Image 1 (cartoon, rainbow, N blue to C red):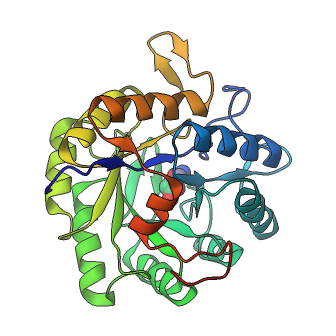
Image 2 (image 1 turned 90 degrees about the vertical axis):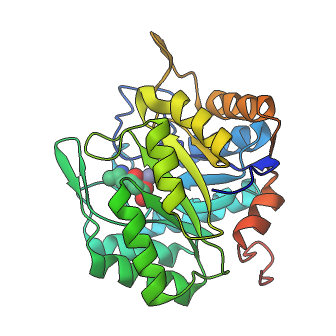
Length: 284
Ligand code: KMH
Ligand code: ZN
């Protein structure tokens, strides 16, 4: 796991695909709401935004036109690293998930294996992983490897062995813990999975629901970065709903400072991940 870095990349995942707007009115589901959220989270210390979008009825969608407009709007309104989800919703077909990259994001998620997801199944078979990975390399999009379970870490190592390094040469992972069916959101999961990551990889962690705080504290002490947001967490404290995504970023920034690690700037995030600068067309 190595040395604890002096800075913390804070990723915000503001929307997700699972929560209904009617159950969480603060969930950003329109483009205007998403851009306003992104600006507030950038001001609060976020460096990267993990994006799921919704259609006109606030249902999850991977519509390519909407995704393209979203990337452009976030790029115009913020300097955040724009990461599109290729996980989408559990019902999204593989070809739509592959097509996400055509929206020209800076980064995309790439989940390294199938996992039970409540009473659903989030499908990520090997051949799909490889096809998606090759497309990230061809389009110079930096993948973030989403790891829901220990076997996903083994699959990531196998992917890198067989297919080489990602675009930009940096391996960045996100431990997604506490999903019903995946690794639990505990310090033990954080440490066990982080130890198995490829040498030199950077990683963040997020704990779903009540595991948010244990996972965040474990990640900070183990040298990881933080992902927070309403995709994963709807309750700020027992009995108290999250006000908005920015307050989760503010809490992450405060935790980071308490751990004597400053929130990473967006330029720091771009450098750490070796993001191709699509804002100016200048290669990383
Ligand atoms: N919504 C989940 C089924 C990702 O964004 O890549 C998948 C997910 C992972 O959220
Ligand atoms: Zn997601």
